[in-house]
Image (spheres, one colour):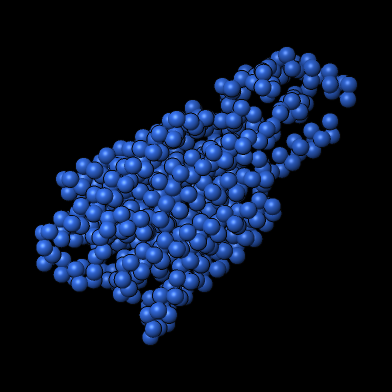
Length: 512
């Protein structure tokens, strides 16, 4: 013990940047440093001790950890920003009928506008992760809320000029902003939360945009104050100018509401959103991460990560594109009122968000059961999609519309819980498999592929000759879930971060 203590004292004068006490901590030093950023300190360690392999052990012994109460504030602000991004993303799908009567914009254009959001996410996810890697999480979050402001400014212009191209450009900026909400949750949780809370924090952050998407099904129609009847939709050419102007004004109110939310997000982030805590919440947060470009290379060659990536995104990417279109799809395939689809989408998304958090809380206590939980949710989603498809294709019939609606609620809610319940589990397991690659970089890979499958789904809408009832959409989701299951079976669980954290704690306990 005395020999080890002597080595640590000798090492201490060469590694002052690692001193985590409140008086000596260098706040500019990154808690999630890349290997390149630690090269200088590593040189000092090598010169200070004859045995390099002891350096990391002695370094971990010197690390002081602290769990801050303000981690919940940080999570709340991030969740609110992500919620607003999801709400703006799903602002216009539930208002498709109103936009058709007001501006003549069809459901195909709504699908195109959602595809523009996905294009923004695909293009911006890796650059914003690079920016966060080079700077910090605060810089990336500020940029995201600036994109959100640009989006609502463009939408205000579009609803004055009635220009489709301008409106689609605003949707593109929504996607640019939303990339942070999708790549940031794992990074936020590893920066601010201890191991026992990490999956739960990821679940809250990752589900916030989905919560906004869910509320988008009802908030837009309520704020607009416009209810489009089936008769008006069928005879849209005969709508009076006064009624058309009333609908246009209602849609403007939705834009004004979105503008208020975007401004509030900007104020909250600029006012107080620190880049990192003064002390790390756990030892593994101080471990060096792989440099960005090397991390890209390593991740792209990680076979197990790509198995996980495909298993998640083939099914979930299709689901995320399918659910916002639910109200339109049910009205065309089962002739239900669009309001029924809006409320069904809202309840399903809320249930999925709540289910995701509850599942994450359970997995936080049993992390090594992650794959087993994912397999159960995968099988359940296949069965639920199959039942929904049989109803839409006419193999299962209901004489009572109330019974039909109730069954649809059960099926869609079940699908949403299975799909959203796996989101934080896949993200956290992906970070474990790719560690020590930065967590946000792994999330960026998952996010980009998720939206690629969403783009493929929206592209199918423009293929001529598809059925008018759009029942192919449920079949596509069913096939996607079936394809993802064998890939999940091939996945080998790996808990690199968790094992290193446990080892560091054991070494610290033995030394003390």
